[in-house]
Length: 312
Ligand code: AGV
Ligand code: CA
Image (tube, rainbow, N blue to C red; front, side, top):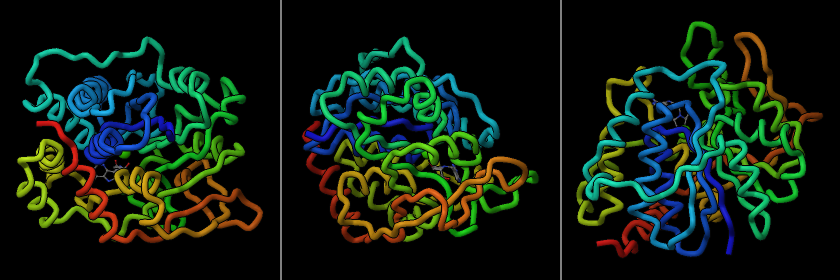
């Protein structure tokens, strides 16, 4: 049984990613860490524990850990506040109590502990900044032996970014920009890395048809939650383009056949307005970059996970 650990940062596709990892039939989720980045961390931790309470149909023993890592460049507040709304969803509060335990360790130490307790090498999925992983590697370099592969949503390898800030040059992706030095630390490690960059999910934008699909299928509890989550992606956001970035990361880890990849060598800049820019460099660090997603295969697997959940 493949073991997974998820570290997410509390935006809408992060919750969708957690949900899909709970619905996959043949894996085990051994822990969840939550970073204080694209969602306020307290409601993001609470909402994660409630999603696990409701959808942990494999009955994995999962604890959730709150990160104490801090931003170099914080996300816009307009995006971060939506975590409070998710945490208030009636679907997640029906029973008025939370059962999934909260770890007393900060997320980077929780990650180290979960890796040491795991039976085999663990697949890591990071759908936000890499800070907790970088700190874990610095605290205990032996953990690399317990990591099978890192799937990371972050960065851009083609010079086109999504950070539209006066102090950024437009080449970087937000998760990388939150903590550029953490990217460099992870790039310096010998981990096997799958990178899902901005270019990877271009085939998977949030569309009106997707909202309708979730609404039409709301009799399934998983689709009902997804419909509510994605209803919070709206025009209040500074940058209205939204893709299934994190969800593709999880789906690529679960179903490798839905993606096409390329081996890419790169280095990452860490200072100034180009910080978090990845540059192709033949002497740089190699990763497997997802270049294309087959949206038909993606949705077939996605629907199967959500419809086969026997929860009502
Ligand atoms: O850059 C993509 C990352 C993903 O991990 N996040 C959102 C996903 O969880 C940052 C982000 C970019 N544009 C955004 C973002 C937007 N319009 N709203 C919220 N977050
Ligand atoms: Ca995210």
